[in-house]
Length: 248
Ligand code: GLP
Image 1 (cartoon, rainbow, N blue to C red):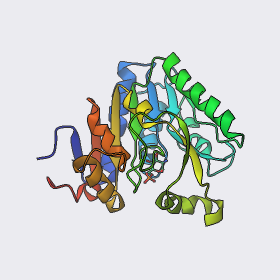
Image 2: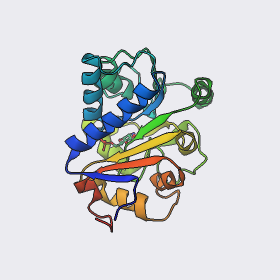
Image 3: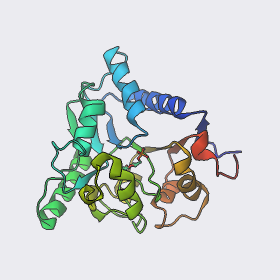
Image 4: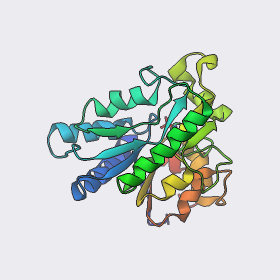
């Protein structure tokens, strides 16, 4: 038997529909909900579902506030592979959200980035903290861009990307030399302070990271494993991502 907070769907389509429903419920219950949002291939269909609900006026994002988990560094916000551009393309050009924030990847000194990361954290606090954070998982077991070695109390900061993560990003850049080696990410500690968390994963390439996160040791070597310390985390998988779980 899977733990009660773990759901397995036949395929990515059903998984994304269910995650979108969960987010929609959160926003209907609390129209000024504060959401943490990821990028990646996995959430694209979630964003399509949310956009469709907004188009049909069964969902209203006008009072929702969102904070993205991460952004490459250095990365001009207007550059096509930026997470800013991704979020516009897949969500914010299609929903009536007025207050959305993505860490700023504009090139500047590490000290300035540090100050801006502190401001990002402060802004989250000022609006009452994160109600719901949606997460994907990287092949390294990362959440946001918290790569192996990230401790449970880390905050928003500049990090170095793991080689596997840079390899996975290659299709968006076309040339390995163009893939940034750093990023700004919300910390594990920032994520764990959210009132609710959803971890979603799809496809067999994620199955090993999912197994380590769900059934392995709780360790900084697999940052997603820290989610098991959170009292309200839902794990949404498709069958391919769940295939190495012992309960499967
Ligand atoms: C990137 C993002 C993560 C995301 C991961 C998974 O690394 N920084 O936040 O979870 O991609 O992406 P995908 O859904 O494409 O597998």
